[in-house]
Length: 384
Ligand code: ARG
Image (tube, rainbow, N blue to C red; front, side):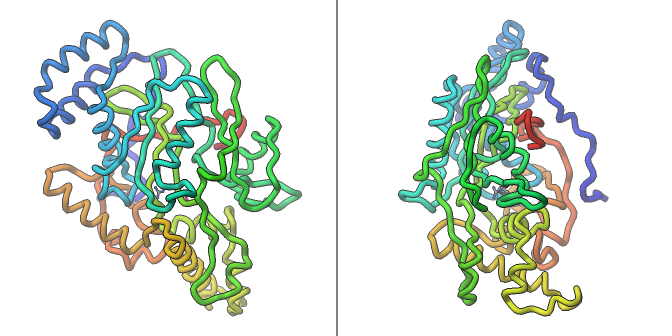
């Protein structure tokens, strides 16, 4: 039996000085070429890669290897419920970008390519931008933000205005001279740092950030809460590893599942903590937990998120649909003879877990490569 949350102490640590492990390179290449017969025989390629590693400590992926490797990394991401569409990932090869200005403009382009720009926005597509591979022992470009789009959290005596999760990061940005408006939904600047230079802050242009104001299909007062959320979740603090090569800057996005926003970002007590406010406006009896006022407010909050995104024409899915898709993914992969590593504690949605099919089984918890791993201390001045 697999205990939820149990970790088989996978060797996920990254030694930035070590040369690429030729065995990991070989394992990836064999699988990649096996799954893609059109790439031809793997043996000649293995000989080249072995020689490159021996001479330089690393090797360079072909565009096909990079693209398929990124898709495999998504397929192996055990916390992601949205993996049914792993083949559709749009891979942008940005390995040649070097300057902070270049990187920033390509990040803006990423948000546009993902469908999260204001013009033509809403048709969200999964996209990854892969910047230069880390060279063993060399410094590499970093983006300090955990996501390309996040809201500031301002510490004011005791309370936080905005997203408390981003309070440390926000304070760090203020330390560099950034000044936000001080509202609950101020978009944070991107902090880009390239080797040999100090960090530079960039304000995202408004046109690159699609947001959805949140209202409710029945409760007219809901819009007065002033809630909004961004259309594209674009994770920018994970290292992509493919065949022993590390890509420390490889931001990627999918589309939102409503409960990420409605049951976590807006609901968690240490995030926007909206349940008491919503329950009060609904006029619920909050005198005892057994009235289930929290649960009732939670459902309406989640309805509001889904309804608002749908009304705005911005792609989102509900946790029932996404759970069914994950079950299809499990069947597809089983047919293909591949295991599906999955982390129950992340796969099961944060609301109504037991009425989704993903709840009622256990999963294999394996650390398969290629994969994504958290980059610790991307921002040296915050907990992020
Ligand atoms: N849960 C995170 C957030 O609320 C996003 C994680 C990635 N989500 C996704 N649908 N691809 O911002």
